[in-house]
Image (cartoon, each protein chain N blue to C red):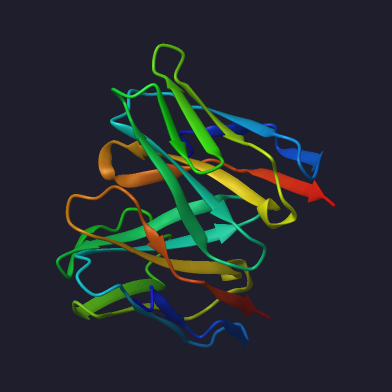
Length: 111
Length: 113
């Protein structure tokens, strides 16, 4: 069963623009994670935000978490062609080891 | 570090054949996961090992699927007999003690004709 849902399903932006995607989840969580998957490749962990954190940065990535709304957002600033990928949020389901992944947001960055 | 290593990267087989997928986790990681990814169902957790012991296999779809982890550096996922609906990308992932993030392999793309 999927705990998280990303929105939008797909996003197309021009190089240099920012990309924002959202994730909503259903139950209380200890942490929320974002992953990137390039076409034909495995998932790569981007960032983990804990339930007591509201915002976290990593390079050009900014993640927010609103536990009252059960939602998170991932912002990619100054996008590059190499950011073209699918982005997934993942939340622990029942126990911390059992990550549930959303269906993902497919981001296309046009040169 | 070489990362999580999976083999084969691609496998095409005929219905009824046995398929064995292999995974070498990152050294020092004590948790290992097998996931399956399809367009229809997304990423599904099949089985989770901790310290080589299967902890949760509730995601294994049928008795045709089995997984083993004979030691800390090797795991297999076996499908016998395979069916066309098993066609998917199978990922192995590992994580270190106490850490939340998973490290994924590049996946094994299985096509069952």
